[in-house]
Image (tube, rainbow, N blue to C red):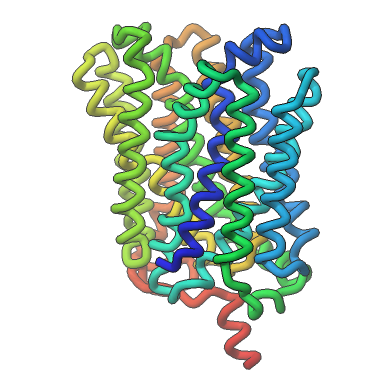
Length: 401
């Protein structure tokens, strides 16, 4: 893999750590601003909604900007937003800071995907995206615990500054090590928007939202399940989250290696395995050993589907940044809807394991949606399921040349 993709992966680590670290800072932020823990929790939803709505708009505004310049500029905006959060004296300022960082992160993800797939041959796109999204997996294993640890020893503001510093270093590395991709700059706004007159693209977005929604419906309620259902002591919860995170790193490495050859079969089997494991977890959640196994397997087959999902979006559409940014928005729809649906089930007195069944239902829905393509043995563009279809925009450039 080109070193530039690793650099972008480190930046993704910074951005995703910011998204999830609020979960570890809830008590400190609640005490600092004098609001309830549930109110602080809205900072997670605000971030996700900012990515859903604002990211595509910002990406459209940057379509004419060279991608390397856009990446460094977005990281600069992210650092500014993170610094604003670190300096916040009122809660509404922290909300604004979260919106700013979410906008920058969403657009960055889309452009980083577009740049990464341009740096490798088409048959290695999946491995490139696995390297890029490796930063997302590591954020769950390292970023969230590290931010929580810094908060406990130096305060929550230090956690914000630490991420801002890493993002600033990432911006310098991007400016120095990521090459310009001049050919891609010929895409115009109209060409990018035309990609959305594409049924398979919206089908890919929908199934991607279902995958992440299924995972987040379960993951968001792991802590009470571990303590109140399985019977683990609260001190074991961070280690259990670490087990889940370690599984995501291993799964990401494995899936990235095979994505380019077996994209649709991996999605099909991934949905099926996700549904089965979530159902089994719900049934055996009172057993500690079975819970450990279920959490480990969920880590292996859940979030590691991210490079597979992104590869599918590119294959059915193009390598431009806008379709990938909207994919990030679709994923964040799942981030919002999954936990919300799980919370509704708990509020309806269906039990703490009910979010696992919600996740199972979402996984089954995704499986049913892609079964016709998987069983037909062909991709949405008509290529055999194991073949790599030529992206729309690259084919157009070759024809024009």
